[in-house]
Image: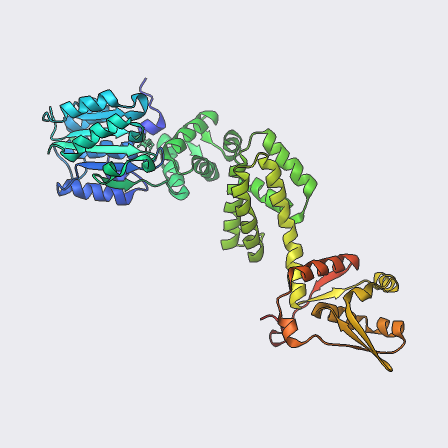
Amino acid sequence: MGYKAIPRKYRPQKFSEVIGQEFITETLKNAVKSSRLSHAYIFAGPRGVGKTTTARIVAKAVNCENPIDGEPCNQCSQCIEITKGSHPDVIEVDAASNRGIDQIRELRESVHYLPARGKKKVYIIDEFHMLTKEAFNALLKTLEEPPEHALFILATTEIDKIPATILSRCQKFIFRRIPEELLVKTLAKICRNEGVEYEEEALRLIALSSEGCVRDAESLLEQAIALGGGKVETAKVSEFLGILTGRQVRELLRLGFEGKKEELFKKLRKLEEEGYNPVFVVKQLLEVIEKEFLNPAELSEEEAVAAFKILSEGYREISRHPYPYTALLFYLHKLSYFKEVKRLTELLKGNLKVEIPRETAEKKTENGTLEAFVERIVEEGEEVRVIPISSLAYRILKEREEELRRKFGKRVKIEEPRQEERRKEPSESSKLLIKKIAKELEAKVLFVKVKENESTDS
Ligand SMILES: Nc1ncnc2c1ncn2[C@@H]1O[C@H](COP(=O)(O)OP(=O)(O)O)[C@@H](O)[C@H]1O
Ligand SMILES: [Mg+2]
Ligand SMILES: [Zn+2]
């Protein structure tokens, strides 16, 4: 006996204890303090972020015998009864359970009687978007002419379903999901309070998994404590939640960048078999990439930017893909192209040098491959004028000038591409061509530092 589940035990009893909704709680506290509360409020927002909690605090604050600066005292009999849920003037209606018609009808009758014990009758209607049309209409009549002593708090997770006629009669507050950092801090505080040892990363995984919902975070923490025999450890929590540890996430990224298909496939299949949620996997990948972007350790800035783009696209697709792990495999493997693309971009900008191994070059030249770089050949007496297909081709041909001379047995003049042509952004097809050529020649692509004023980069 005496045991209370964490979400119940840690339910805030004052405005100042509600986390992450400061704008709302401050506004309400000030309204209580100056007795300027509206007759009707809508509390909208996702599950488990403090709507019911805040509604009950409002009920206490307006009925408290000794409110302190807009906060309930939590000691007077009014406060105590409301906390226990047994105050006759605080009426909670759950619209989800019976769609409310009888209760709303009853409410319409009883609302005109004065409060039995407190100062105000507070009606908290939970999930009120579930009310039937009749119940809505009944409620609307009451909201049109609410008695002075009545206060309505209508909570919903789906504000879109609320008719405009009701919305216009209420002051609206939109409750937010709680940021991860704040959840971690709150969970850590609970652990310390419970005398439980914890690893911070474990709490981070719990926060991530609960997607900004405090109730879920607290319930998961409770399970994690039970599971770890009073200790909250990363490895166990990771397994139990089906979310990866930071180390595992970095491993996936590395395999992707390195293009290790086989290993990546095996690793992902294992995660799938163990029931890891692929959407969380992608979310975690994105988080690590963000960290790398702000504080580069393993990825360069360009890599982080490219990876973020690729995996953000992946996220949208993976979340509704029939084979999410297969999709993830392809998206992660796409990271390996990035290094290639970067090299080619540099190549096209002229910041690279192409080094063709002599033997291959000779072999290929015999087979006429060098012609692939040539747009036109103009024979003019003792001279052969060679017009290359691109600025890259120019540079390749320039290096092979001697071979060309031998081939033609004449003087060779390789025409330099015109300046404006050099500055032109290469087309998709020429990029493809270069890729093909580089492969064909088994070319090794080397970085060459280009002096600022020589660069053709615009
Ligand atoms: N903003 C918050 N600050 C502190 N605890 C919260 C908050 N939101 C939810 N909780 C915790 O989650 C439990 C459920 O919250 P509740 O107010 O019933 O959520 P909602 O009505 O939005 O679904 C509370 O008992 C409390 O422990
Ligand atoms: Mg609720
Ligand atoms: Zn009180």
